Amino acid sequence: MTSTESKDLMLVILSLFSAFQVFACLENLVLLRGQAPSGSVLKPTFPRLVRELFPFVFQDRAFQALLIFALVVNVLVTLMASFPQWFFDSRLIALQGFFLLMQLIRFRGSLNGGSDFFALHLQIGLLIGFLIPAEPAAKAGLAYIAATTALSFFRAGFYKALQKKWWTGEAMAELLKSSPFAEISMRSWELSRLQIISWLTVIFQLSFPVVFILPETGMAVYFALGFGMHLANWRILGLHRFLLYWPLGYIAIYAMNLEVLRFVN
Image 1 (cartoon, rainbow, N blue to C red):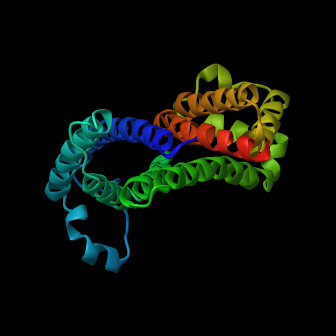
Image 2 (cartoon, helix red, strand yellow):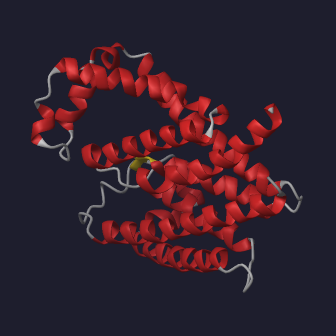
């Protein structure tokens, strides 16, 4: 894959990521306006140093203004990545990263599950690809995004594998019973059925890094299974941003898969 092709893929990721960030900013604004007067849900206890460094993050009006600025910047970056021949300023990507970090601090990185921190990894990969002036920077950014995407699956599978409840199906049963988003019919599934689903989930996540050496058909199967898992996260846990961010990692994995197979062959 040439440097130009790598940069084109990075522009695709940047365009989609920024568009998704526009959606996230709007969603966070709605959430902030609809919170309880005390703001207790959105203002957990933070270390004093963090509060002193970023006091505006914990002030509702200031944070609303920050979200509006973030919204504007993400719209600009979306247009910039979609039409780079018109204008392109990598400093906007750095500013985009700053606004994302402020939102992670405010919501402690867990507003929409692991997708919030994964968005930060995507942002880091984009910063590597566009802020470093060296020619292979775009390929390095793709490599970082691909590696963190594969690692996110492996880590999740490794964590589950260490817990006996995931091998017996009990963890899946508890998850379905505690989630307000799960359908009533799912909560009555037999433990043996949930055990099979749990085993398949753990095996799939642990084996995900093999995607780097698979042919296109095998890679597509893993991507489809991954997308199905993200869809389940949305339906069962209400974590819809998984559907937005992880497929961007698949684009990077596809690029790195081509590099690995070319090197092996």
